[in-house]
Length: 234
Image (cartoon, rainbow, N blue to C red; front, side, top):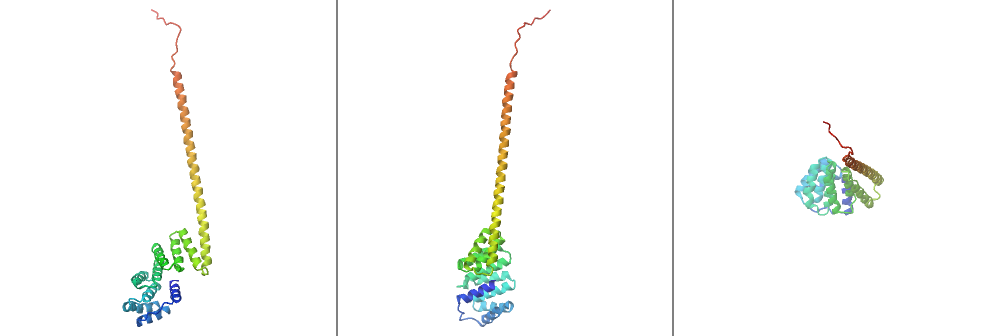
């Protein structure tokens, strides 16, 4: 995905070949385009030392490291090459995001794809990959937003149908989750209302009991009078 996106972008933008390219770069580029990352990387490493301003040397070298599974080294190369990336900085950020994504470092990947989008807002691949990074973090609403933008930029994508299915599934899941939460809130409300009603009934019962006790106490305090005189017998 990263390789094809980068090569397509280079072809579309028509970037001129650097006139001061070293022989190392020319050979490394040829091997890179032949999909020989191990052989290409040695020559491209030399090319970055010989011509540090050659942004394509840094870019190709980083992608070679990605293909070899050396993602930490790839990120380091992309970062080091950024100052030379006068026209391709968004591609550098995009590929850093790809390396972070491959490592499961999804928050970092999301950030890098965001930088790529800022650099070239009409380039579709970062939207797709940021959506995937957001999905991995369960940021479903944000992922849907990115998938939607991706489809608007690249409606004929071979993945379009699958993406639409994912969007639809997320929508249904969110609706079901919203309904579940609403039902849970309704249950809690009903329980609270029942509890309040019970407390009110107990309070009323206690009040009535207290009133009855007060009445009984008042009645038992009456003194009975006697009309007959008592006489003590000797």
